[in-house]
Image 1 (tube, rainbow, N blue to C red):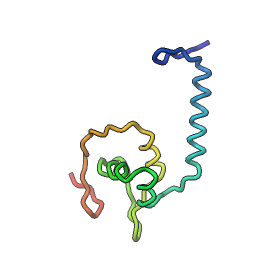
Image 2 (tube, rainbow, N blue to C red):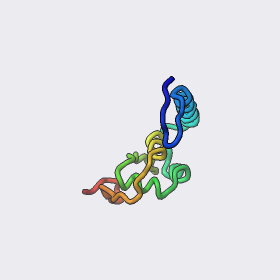
Image 3 (cartoon, rainbow, N blue to C red):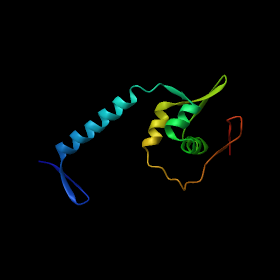
Length: 103
């Protein structure tokens, strides 16, 4: 029987796979009701204004301008939400008010 050593414990490989599969299924179910795009207001509400602004400033999330609103792809925001962030990282690109990146 295969086992994994995680820090100070041994976990059977089958138990690890079952737990991992259960978590993946849970994430898929949770995300299945998400719309493809969310407006900026909803993105701020779901993921936090500072987070969305930081991801945008760092060039990690792309935004789409529609008449009268700014939208983000929900799947991109979910991915960033689940990714470990380096909050001390300096921004790579700055944006002007028109949404275009400056170097």
